[in-house]
Length: 423
Image (cartoon, rainbow, N blue to C red; front, side):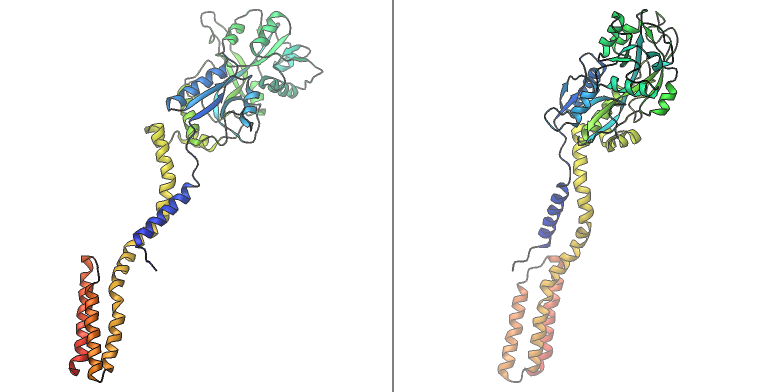
C-alpha cells in the first residue's frame, strides 16, 4: 500500500477545511440592487437617488422604482415574486413587524401636517371632529397613521369623514374647498409643503401635545418648526410651531448582503447627516424612531461606525479581505494543531526509515549467537553483508545521515561481537 508524504496529507486536510468553511460563507455581494423610492418629485424619490449614487460609486448597478409610497414599498420588500425590491424608504408607524424585512435606521423626520381652512377648535386631532379630511387612500402611510391617532383621541368613522386623497392633492383639495382639512405626512423639503405653508388662506394646526404622543408611540417624535425657518425674509412661520413627526426609515430585505448594507449606511451618514429645518446636523441617520427590527449590520454601524477595513479600503478590497478572513482565520485556527505537529511527524517518518532495520539486526544477532557450524556462520555473515548493503541504499536528508552511519556502526559492532570469536 502506497504511503503518502505528510506534507501532501496536510495539504489535502487544509483544502478540505477551507472548502468546508467556504461552503458556509455567504455569497459575494450582488452587482445589482433595486430600490423602491416613492412618487416622482417627492422626498422618498430624492432620498432613493442619494442612496443609489452611493452604491453606483462602488460599482453596483441600481434601479429605482417609482411607487405610491410606504405601503407599496413595504409590500414590495416582503414580496416573493418579481415585484420585490431590495431596499426601500418606509414611513415609521406603518410597518410594525414584517417577516423578512429589517431597518438600517431613520434617515429624516417626516412631520404630520394638518392644513385646514379655519383655525383649530380643539387640540390637534380633536380639531378634525365633524370635518371632511383628506388623509390618503386606505393602506397608505398617512391614512394608517391618521386612523391610529384619531383612535387615540376617541374619534371613529362616525365622527368625521376621511377622503382618499393624499399628498399635494390633499392640500390642494383644502385650498379648493372640496374638503375641510388635509392630514399629510411629508418632509419639509418637499416643495409643495412650503408652498402651502405660505398660503394665508390655510391654517397649520399645531401639535401642542406632541410630547404625549411621543411617549405613547416610540416611532413618533416631537419636533418644532422654528419661527422664520421656512422663509426668514417673510418671517414664516411667525411663531414656533410644535409638530409630531414620523421617521423615514431605510428598510431592506433581511438577506441583503452585509456589504451592501454597509455601503447604504455609509452613504446615509454622508448625505443625511447635514441636518434640515427640523433636525440639527448629526441627528440622522440614527437607530431611533424605527418600527422594524434593526439588522445586525445596522446595530454594529450605529454602535461603532464602519469597520476599519471599510473606512480605509475601497469597497471591493474591503469585501475581499473580509470574505477571505472568514475562511482563512478559522481554517488557520483549525489547522494550527496539524501545523504544529508536522515537524515531529516528519522527523519520526525519516528516522523510521533507519530504525526499521534494527529489527533485522536483532534477528541476525540471535542467529549469529546460535550458529554452530561453519555453514551457519557463513549464512549469518552473508546476512550482515546484505544488511550493510541495503542500509547503504537508504535515502535520508543530509541532516539525518548521522542516524544512518550510527546504524552501520551498530551492524559492524554486532557482527564483531557475535562472530569474532567464531571465526
